Image (cartoon, rainbow, N blue to C red):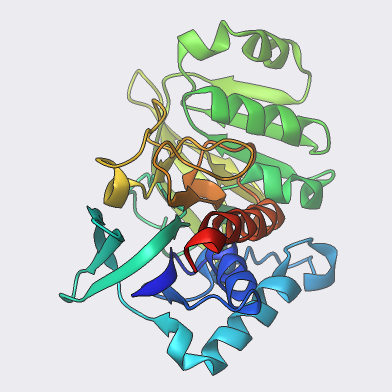
Length: 301
């Protein structure tokens, strides 16, 4: 039996695992791969890596350590977590059953896609899914935000503070009635296209324009140097959905010590209801979860 199993190989999971190992816990990281969201980096023709705060140095250091410490990682996807008399069982899709006294869930989120031609071709090449992360790169640039809810409004508002112009495509009338929607209606550098649908992403190496269909069926093209798809994230919380409390969006509810509603189960990173889906935030939350799990385990060791 392990002291601790960390599920998820992104920034939160990598950090938690290294912290646990340094606390001399018998820890294992279980994940389909290592790196998580840091494996996807926005590429733009005018940007160098040093201009973006990604947290990659920290994440890559921990990733390199775990690639060396083969005994501390298992590259398999987790199917579910179950309670057992002395702790928990982590069941993988390949049929392994791993026992642990405590578990940290750091499985992150997955993006909702538009599922239109060109989207996968230009992913992270002028087309991305986080204006919060990349808005500062688009000073005096033409941009597009695609989405129908509050996330799209927030992304548009953030881009509007730096970009030359922002097209907001597909926003719902209900969202526009919110205070942020009213502000965007009055912004001089924002064009709002409610009810429009994206039918294709086009470009040459990088995403350069999108084709949209208006409510009356007309098809137009919008050119941009950066396009953001902000239709939401899906938390990868299904493996513990019957064990711990989730919020209405399906995120794992945690308190300030990264503890869930079930003692012995901790959670960290984007899969939780913490503020901001950011790499450096996830790194900090992973460290916190590991330290909190260590305090929980100390009387049991």
